[in-house]
Structures are given as structure tokens and as C-alpha cells.
Length: 421
Image 1 (cartoon, one colour):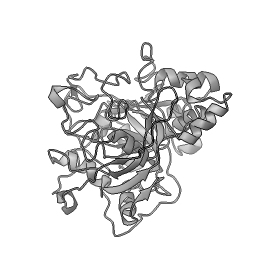
Image 2 (spheres, rainbow, N blue to C red):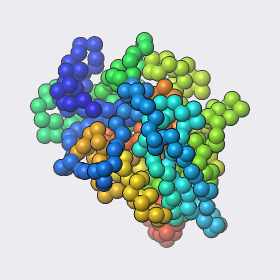
Image 3 (cartoon, helix red, strand yellow):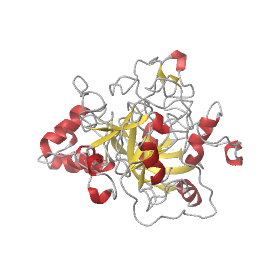
Image 4 (cartoon, one colour):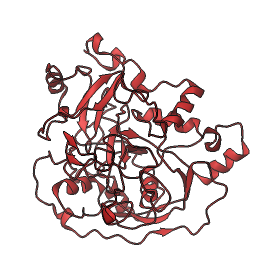
């Protein structure tokens, strides 16, 4: 991550849309971008100072490196052992029952073992055994229509719609303190992949209602995933709907759909029998998306096949928030403790490339994932993002325990999943 001074210099270039000069720190997270409002509390430390953590960049723009001993090791997955409990009935509207059970969590070696795929798995090691209780999960990412119901009912205003406060951005020119968000804006020619400013820009007026900027809207896109949602926004929706955000362990168990050790949520091949299984980036990143899968940006939430648990878009389309703080060394702690039961994530965030920034783990990849820069459509891989940030390739879905659902059924005045949807 570049220092603030460097960001200011880059943002002053006349050919670039002005960002919130002096306040927007941007980092590429697998073909993604995160904007930082301010540093968090005092810098967190690694769980184990002897552990070497990977660099922030997960794309092919990172400096070439040899395959580490860890990457050379054979990754061993044990079979998934789902709980035998029968799926509860009735289920919340729009949600699928995820049985929970014991499984191997983490990423295997990418099928082609290229540098991009290898980098995508560095913070997803070691593979370790985890147990999670059964739960319900939204079959799709939260859609524009669903989020609009929440906003109409509560009057909620997302972070992207709020004018940045001067106290959060010391030294920023007042004219640059405008509400907006970060949007993918591909160049019209090939560019080096070591400068993500070439394909990301801060656009005033960009938010969930206007995903590409103020001249865009979501007309006809009620069944598309809502985007430009920061972590705080996702939490607010979940609370209103009587749900919560999934832990990383819950998310991965659900995404695997009962499979064990497969690179993709649907199996071993990226395109089985030539069929597109997820909304990803085709062509030459970032300037040429050939649209082979039918989409250059987000797609309807039910466009591609479900996984084994009936969940859509657990790879591609948009990244998804989880409730876990991000730490690249967390899996090593879990492995050392034996079978982890319902892990809730580490107690604090730590990213060696951005110490002090409070990041949550993200999962699932997006329509920008490609084998040239980001391969996080692989099921065990992880993303990360500052809690204050939303982009046009980031959404979320919610979960609910059986106990929470039973409580909702006894309290019909609450905004249960069935009522909200």
C-alpha cells in the first residue's frame, strides 16, 4: 500500500478523476479496491512474530517469487462430515438449510499452479479441520430490491451516500469532501498490473442506487446484488432482517456444498463441459472483457447454477462480507489448537501491508476475478477489506441459526426473513 503522500501525488495527475485528495487510500485486493477513511486503533501485532505473512497484492503484478516450501507441500483434505440432522421445516423464505458439520477449511494448490493462483492461497493456509453448527443462509446475495425495502422501512443512509467528515480526513480540501464511492473504470488499452489506479476511480455520487456513478441507476436490476455496501451497511440490514453476517467458517462450509478439497464450489473443472459456472472476467485484464459469460459487470443473482446446498453466486459476481476480522496468520493458530468448533475469527484485525487498518475477511471473488490478476473464485481463498469501504463489486448475504429462526416465528411483529422478503 502506498503512503498518503504517494496517493496525493498520483491523485493530482490531470488525467485521473479527482479522488478525495489526501484521504482516500486505495489497495487492490484480488482485482478489488478498498478506500480507507482513517487508520484504526494502535497497530495490531501478528499472532506469532515468527510467522511470515504474505504481501497485500494477490495479483500477477506482485514481484515474481519462487514457489515456497509451503506451496510445494501436498495439501491434504479429509472428507466433509455433515451433520445428519434433517433440514428444519418450514425454512425462512429465500434461505437454504446448511447442515453444518466437520470439514477441511482452506485452499488447495491451484489446479495450474501458476503464480496468480499460488498467491491467492498464501493466506488460506494451512488447511485445518473446523466444525460448525447448522444454520440457514440466504440463497442469494442481498438484492437491490431487498435492500430498497430496508431503506424505505428505516430511512437508512449508506456510508457511500454520506458526505465525508473533515475530521476523518485531515488536510483534505473541502471541495473534495463529497459523497461517493470507488468504481471499476477500465482503461482502453493494456496497462501494467502494478498500478491499480489505472482501473479504479473514486466517483462522486456513486452508491448503491447509482452503481456506476450519478448518471447510472438500478432500473431493471431489482434482482441484481446490491453493491457499494460497507460493513456497517451490511450489519444494519442484517439486524433489521433478524439475521447476521456469516463467519468465515460458516461461509466456506456453505460454499463447498458438501464437497471436500475441490478448487471450485462446483467441482474440479473451471468450465465443466464448457459451461460457465460463475460471473468472472474473461479477456485481457483490465482493459478488455470479452463478455464470454454474458456479463461485463454484475449479473442477476440467479443467473448461474447453484452449488450442492442450493446457494447461488458463491464464486464470482460480487465479493461477500463475513464477520471475521482479517489476519493472514489466523489459520495457523486454528490448526495448532486442534479441531476448531464454530470459530468466530480473531479478536483483532492485522494486515502486514496495512497495519492499523481495520479489515474484515471477504469471500467469493467477483466479476473482476481472472487467472491473470485474481483467482479468488477458488473456494478456499480469502479477500479482505476495510470496514468503511464499499465498491461496485462488493455485496453480502446473511445467515440465521435455527434458534434465531424459531424465535422469529414466535415474534411475528419482528422483521423476520419471511416478512422482509
